[in-house]
Image (spheres, rainbow, N blue to C red):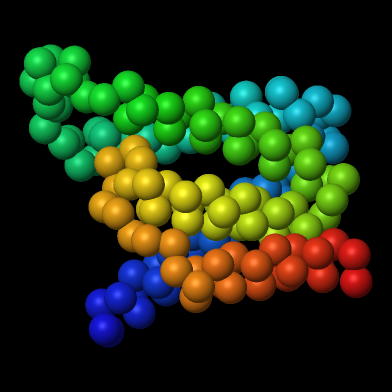
Length: 149
């Protein structure tokens, strides 16, 4: 139980990073005038950070056969991350940080419930339950409250 609370805390800190990232990218967009350019420079920072961590930690590179055997959907994280950065740069200034992140979380939750239920993308199955449905509806209601009330 304590380990799960710790992991939830780390996930919450990740959420802090995501909202700060969206706000920073939105400001970057305002300063540079284009969401694509802001996303590009943000992703350059991601690449520099990833390279620095690779140099620092020197992980063992997997054999080429392992890389080739990796399912196709393992490779979509990078492009999806780029789309998230671009969306943050384009939408945060227009919606505000809270509404943007609330909508992102709502979309994440709805898709995650389906990914869990159907055990997609390598996940272990976790059935849709009344509690999960109620939780998802509450998040959607929260998105509406944040944006419209």
